[in-house]
Amino acid sequence: MVFSKQPIIDVKGAVIFQGLDTVLQDVNFSIEPDEFVFLIGRTGSGKSSLLKTLYADLPLKMGKAEIVGFHLEKIKRNEVPFLRRKLGIVFQDFQLFPDRTVAENLFFVMRATGWTDREKMKNRMVEVLMRVGLADAATKMPHQLSGGEQQRIVIARALINQPSILLADEPTGNLDPDVADGIFKLFQEINNEGTAILMATHNHDLLRKYPYRVLKCEKGKLLDSKTEDISINTAY
Image (cartoon, rainbow, N blue to C red; front, side, top):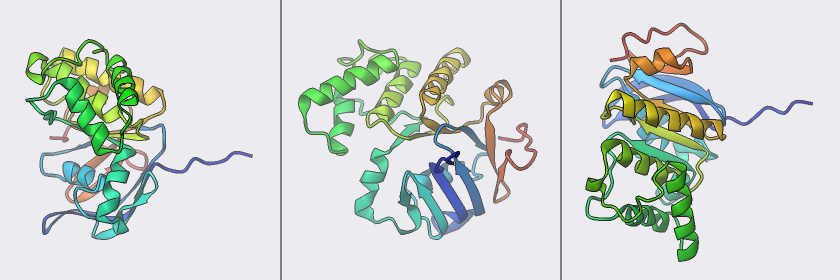
């Protein structure tokens, strides 16, 4: 007997808002636990709003969405931190504290998500820094790191709680092509180890080079390459 895997994200009939404005209507898609999925679309088409809804930064006012076991249409404010412990969130603009070392940046996230044992925190910090290839960066300040190194720290931060899925919003957008390629390969390695990835991107070279499934925000709708042909040339 073959048992089907429970989708890590399952969205049905969702309407995505940015403030009072509707940006996406009748959104339906699911993502399996080990999938790698691109999210594309022009600026302002709803990519970031969709991601923010998935990590409960924006409320889901209409429709249903389940992610890592949480129902977003009825999630309570005090449950959001527990949701985010199961997610990894990677931002384009890094959002590292500039006046704290790499270690202090990582410890901040650990404390905010319930870690209390200092020795376990140190061990986990070493593990995630090794995972992203920056084992010697703990005592450095963000300004001492290159853009690519800072993004690797952001990915390390996202991996702290061994998330089931990474939500990445243009993680290579501010990096030169060679550095961006290295960051993307790191995401692939993480995906191959069993973590699902949903990555918003404008990078057409990545889309052409790596034929992963594509979700496209276009004219208020979310299109899915699993069920329809999608042009990647109008992603901007």
